[in-house]
Length: 351
Image 1: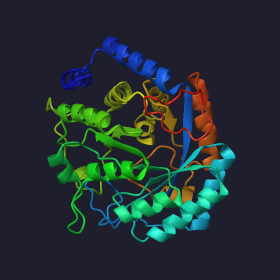
Image 2 (image 1 turned 135 degrees about the horizontal axis):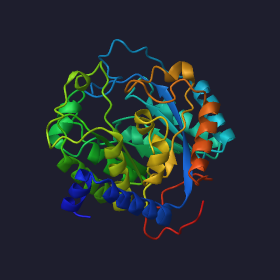
Image 3 (image 1 turned 45 degrees about the horizontal axis):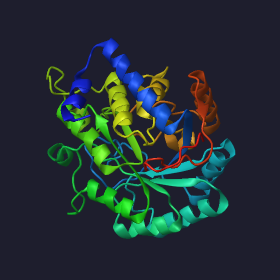
């Protein structure tokens, strides 16, 4: 699709027309990545962050956050649960926490790779080329870094530079590709000041970056952030809503534009619709879910946005719930690592 076609779908409100879009996305998902839904075990091991992002509740100036860092042994307990549950991947996520040193992370990655067959995905913010190289050499397989919006002016408003270092996430994504990582990114939907035109450009960026993993989710205001205190102009015909239907449109269009990508049905989507948000995301293009392995006593403090779904569930509860939800829509839990099938010459295998 070109920009104008994407824009037309993003503005579409007719339910019958949207059923056509959902069907096209589901067909593309089935043909290119199959019926398996891959489970990625999420471990939110630190909520310290050096950044002042205008949308995130973990920003460094928020004095209302109870900060924590999990020990390596605590992380490894979660990793072993992921292996026990049959997951193929663990996702190590934190704020941009420089208290977790390069060497500490490298040691953790090596330990995971030596003790389990799991793929390791990192989501640690904007780190230096030296850090990213060290972690890749230690065995990390994938890296997630959302560029949040392709609009450079809007990006600068919501994501200040750090210590004079210019924030250039597109450049970092290209660096990650050169280092041999599978590369993931994504955007928020409904940021104050965002336009439909911005979202169409985001979709074209996904395609041009040839991403292996793409996450799209709603902007959910946090009261202790700059954006959370800003009133959205809901009367503007340029401002896209941050509702679940807009998220489904972006999931579906992402699948059509990037048919080989791994696309999660996110926790943020489930937060908008706890009853069937994840299921509808899976039925409209997604093929990944990320059950949370973070111990509940820490999980409640990883508050990027408020009222997050499943905040007090145990890892075992979350695992069982995910399996039942996947089976309820006629899909099956994937086996193996669920590596990227982005390259056109990749041989398709059911698992």
